[in-house]
Amino acid sequence: MDYKMADRLIELRKKKGYSQDELAEKLNISRQAVSKWERAESFPDTENLIALSRLYNISLDRLVHGVEFDNDDEEKDADIEVDVKEVLSEALAEIDEAEKELAGFEGFGGRVG
Image 1 (tube, rainbow, N blue to C red):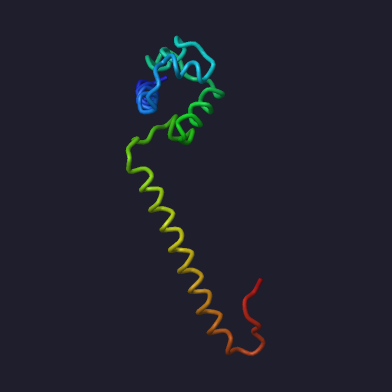
Image 2: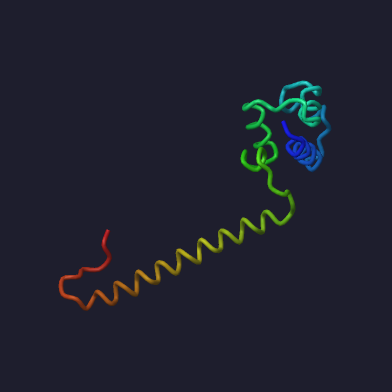
């Protein structure tokens, strides 16, 4: 395991306010296992990676590959959600305009679907 992953595990544990003992208890493993992960001497197995991602409420990708962990993440997610809604709204408006244009053509019966 690389040191970046080890540092990430330490940071996430501390942000949740867990000691190594508390984290180990939650995962039903030894404190020594947690310590080895945080010293980059070993890597959590798949089962523990999944448990950690659930415990810390982050994706496995973020847990393993790393993304800066800051308070702006929720705002970034909200911005993405707003952008998707805007794109969908614009697309529906374009469809409505196209339907209005086609309404004048003979045989067009409205929305397809």
